[in-house]
Image (tube, rainbow over all chains, first blue to last red):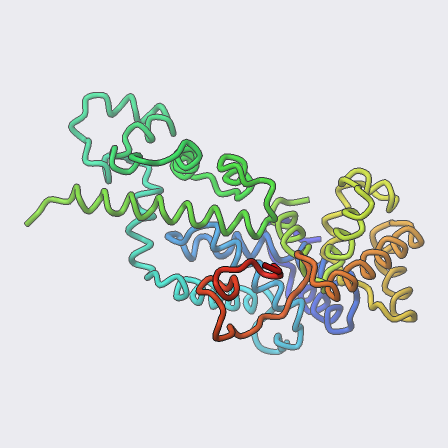
Length: 214
Length: 131
């Protein structure tokens, strides 16, 4: 069995693919167990500015597509790992297009959201309390969010914002914070994505307002 | 079992291709939570994720037993218990599809000229309403 962070060897990949083609009912489970986590791990560094949630979905899509249509992969060219990475990248690209977002646009926000240094985006580097706030973690970061971002947000949305600032990735954690844990997983994802998009737009607008005018 | 796998296993609960789907129907109809479902199938709760990601057995008799035995043998389940759960789950799925119960798979249809903008029917009437 491959470790969680590494793909199966090319030989093991071929064996898994063969089991899928032969209709082994346990093959989908084996393929997912062997490839999902390594695929997510491989996609992350190649897409540092893409929402990890979207990376996870793209990995899932690529694996589900292979499971449903194993003939789409033709051994002899790429090995299974490379094929899945290519398929997931394509899924991700399509998802980004569907959202009407450019990578560059996302990179702008991701840099804001994920920056280790709040001074990079909040325009508060003259705040004498900043060094202390930086070390206080997520609560301090929340305190540094421009008031316009927080204005009108309900408590559940603020909890989601806190989680974003903490770099939380798990949908379940967001769902719990936003009070939608009772929904089906795909519904949770949809709802949480909407909230995150709304918050990101607010941050982007606040950032633009803070930009010096020429 | 890893969290991404668990998420995937839950995602496919609405996909009849995967065993997760009939198992979810079965568990729901019997009022079973995860530990109870695992106990009924004679396995550990941790095995449920791998089980859910297996292909759903062919509903036709020869293939059904072959698939059930392959899954049960591989994951260490009681084949009879798995067969009973899957058979009941698949039957429930068929009944729900036939009845158009929410949660079953429904085919999309084109909007009719009189339909409201949100698809709620003419004049905003609720789907299926008799007013």
